[in-house]
Image 1 (cartoon, helix red, strand yellow):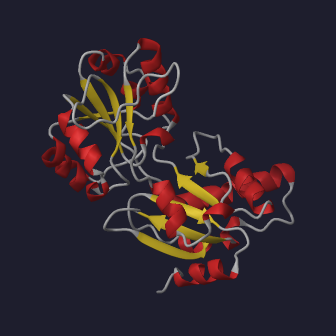
Image 2: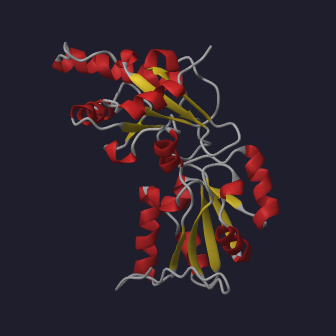
Length: 282
């Protein structure tokens, strides 16, 4: 995949030449890493695991050494200010390993721009992402999803309400919403991620609703606690779990590590059946 004025996107396995390689390693189970991704990562002279936009389980981190060789974890500062990595990529093959699909994060798109400006070859090996898994595993029709939403932690006294507004906008347009949970309570991206749990996420949604009710009046809008939801936990791993119910019911499901949620709009008959098959059974 090449374009005029864009550094070459070479995906040739036989010769891994100097440049920066962004390699998707799947959603959290290295068995879902492609053969091409493994081979190129093994042949790169420097390997970095990006550790702040997503999390690779500890047992999989240990396995990564055996699979591709030595690597170093890098956090937000080293990715947003990648001077060291770029200088290395001018003369040798350097890869950044990304949980999921590498180009879904804005920061990774910026790396392409840096490489273009400095004449460094930039290469992408796609990976299976949790976002695509969430849509398919929800049992809902992919064409009925609207804009996805990230639910952030509150910062100090500040509570964003735009995520709830986006969910409501999707609902008005009869579109399902994929809600991604924040991983970083500090908002800085420098510390080891602390994934938001379902109880925290649903409490935050309820607080957003109460804030908007006070500020704008939402008398004809039901509390999020009454909404239907599909909770998707540890997608792509051996611990994967998918449960449906009201958000009030799902708020009790604090089992697992990485979670996201689908807020459905109106169901088709087939979607309703799929939702019911995933219902919480005590």
